[in-house]
Image 1 (cartoon, rainbow, N blue to C red):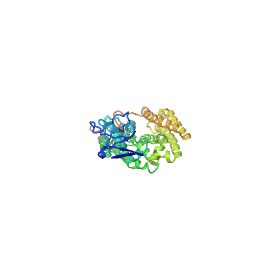
Image 2 (cartoon, rainbow, N blue to C red):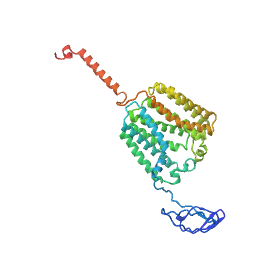
Image 3 (tube, rainbow, N blue to C red):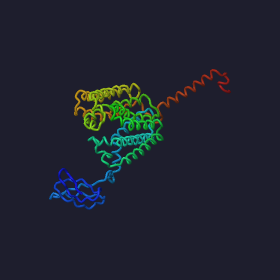
Image 4 (cartoon, rainbow, N blue to C red):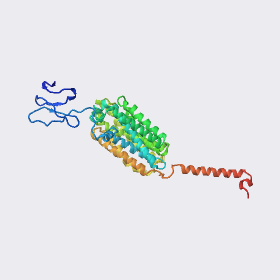
Length: 388
């Protein structure tokens, strides 16, 4: 069998296609078969000082590394992103005007994490051809062949089924419906839209705003104005965060064919980041007005939101790698700090009974008492006062 590299011809002793390996040529030489190791793979021979041909080990694709399955599942589920989703869900649960229940809290948290892991796995399954063209994603599991597509889809199906079951049976139907809707929105609408229209950023922001709603619904069973404040903050935060991230990744996104604001409309990318950073400040002021927090919250978040808006303004005025990187990095600090301030300034904490239950009980008692009083005024005196 003859292998060619440029104009150099090398005689080899490879017998079958399975024996094909990558060859780094230094001088023409004859390759002798190497003994196989315990994995059935030809080991890399030592580099010869005499200029012999060096063999690189042949590895099947897809291939798995023993003992790395859990680590691969973490990568497939985008563990850091899933952790952020879970944290915002926990924040929504804690801010809800209802009693804290450890069992439903655990089911809501774990179920949301599993649904997020499933969504990220399906996202990577769909984007293998495009991830391979981006420096940031070219080493993902499915791109490098460390996991089969069937394995990834099976993991996603099991995770989604388990997660939605936990949300439905462990919390309530509303939380499960929000989780299922978010899974559908992320995998079926947002993922393909990334290559069609810049509207994908707005759709992706809705995806990021739903987890705190799931936490709120998991605790209170309903959604009200306070839940919308939290969701609005998460929705607005996505724009300065992602626009700053995508600014330095424009060559990658352009190469892979993704329709991002930073690529197709840089001016809109800068303006949107600034506008929504200001919107976060406005929503923070509205939180005490809607009885989600006390009024100290508006004062305490003022410097945090002001600096965030300042960085967004710097990004708007001078859009370079430095200003975008500063905005992106501070966004990773801004959101956890804002959530902590939400918790520290919650209007009222409930430890035994859901919010409104005591008021409902008091109002029911007062209504019964008033009815009895009215009945006593209508009935004859002997009947109203009872037998003597």
